[in-house]
Image 1 (spheres, rainbow, N blue to C red):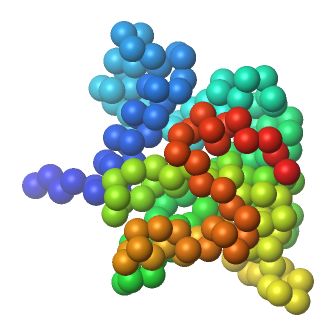
Image 2: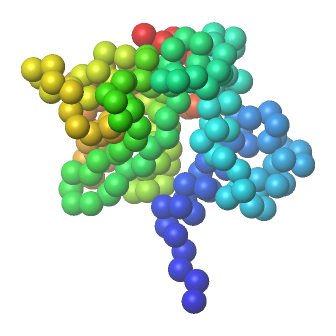
Length: 181
């Protein structure tokens, strides 16, 4: 018997659409587009998202896939998922610091799956917010390696963005164009 993997299938559907819209190698009618549509699980979706940032930033930075940063402006690309449970849910963006406590070098450009609204959110998390989200108020590093953003099901919105100066954009292109800080 076949059971649909709800978040996995939704993630592949939404990311496939995003890639087709923002990656020229996967545009309408291309052989890569057909391959992506036929078997999206064959592709490293996260890597394609990283590539797309450079392709959509109008030359502001290059994709270098370095240690603790993905781009020459020291920002990093991350994907995450909203875990929907109860009235207050959490979007988790994993591996924002390594096991030795080294944070990503700069800002984070995050694409987050929202299974409640069946959409992707585009967040710019400034360098200071990365630090603040991974440290206590007293400056002690938290044990978690993930950034967690609170989401209110009642309001259908993320509630921690303003507190940390996180910007949500309507489109991937807008997120790609945001200067790193």
